[in-house]
Image (cartoon, rainbow, N blue to C red; front, side):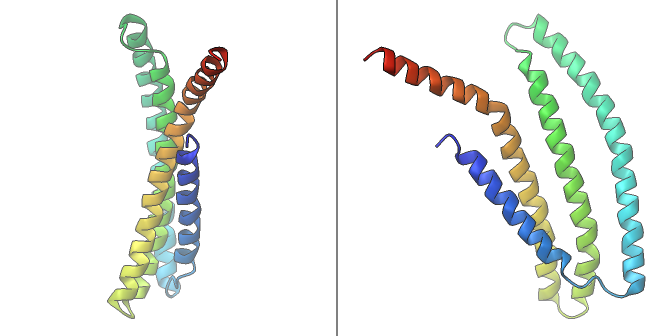
Length: 166
């Protein structure tokens, strides 16, 4: 039962990959549409690069403040810094994946809308599914990775106590 979050996160991320490949197989339109979409994609990646530089500075500063708080406030622990950094890394990774699939989905949705609204909705919801499963899967995976050592420690302790009491 303790491994269920990792299994579910893995299943969600695996389905995300399948759905992403389906979205990427959809028609991206004519040459002009592809050219515009490529410029949007490049701009989005440039934005992310600039944002992540600022995010790295923020994470560093906030981590220092959190570490200071953890030393002076008895109800906190230094692991709050580790949790914050793990969360920031997984959040940045999810944002990167989301931005990439969103920009790739937009042109495919536009092309699908030329044929019918249901086709456009299928493509756009497929891209949204990829983003949603990516964010949720990475969140569960990151949280589980952070908490798993504690869960295993408790489980080993319970088994040890049960064995010693026999």
